[in-house]
Image (tube, rainbow, N blue to C red; front, side, top):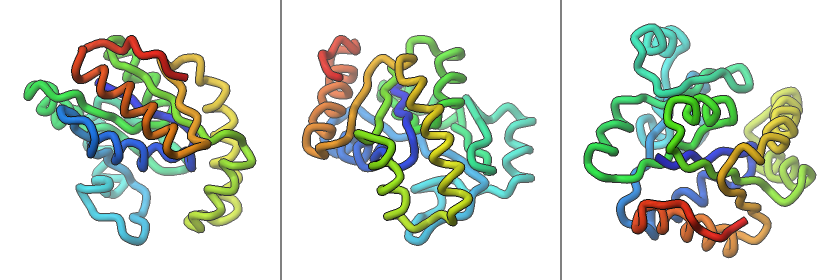
Length: 190
């Protein structure tokens, strides 16, 4: 199990997509969320979009490996799909926020934890503003959360600073390839 976390705007999704294309033996766990879909997002491909009531029912039924509230919305990792991937011998990538990463670490201490961040908070803000998907209040909430998340980076096995996309891509692919091929996370990369 590979957990990828970090602030919004760090480029996690892009790096994960590139790793999935480059490394055989990887699978991606689609998260569930109560947030509204963004333009171009497809249900069950980008997220499993649920109402708050549906999500809360899944919580009561114990369907999540982890779940958390982030920026006013609920996000969670459906455990059944993760187990299906693992039973097929695949290494499964979870893209989760800090609370979720901590919950996964508690339940699955063997999980490899990768923290991805932009080179600075200024760059994080610039990337979030460039998305134009948040109003000013939501943007400020994400920036406050990003500060908390960056202060927790030492809780992770690896840190990938996404300042140069090519280097970040090569780094995350090297980490994931080693996990899949060697079954270990002993890769020199920071």
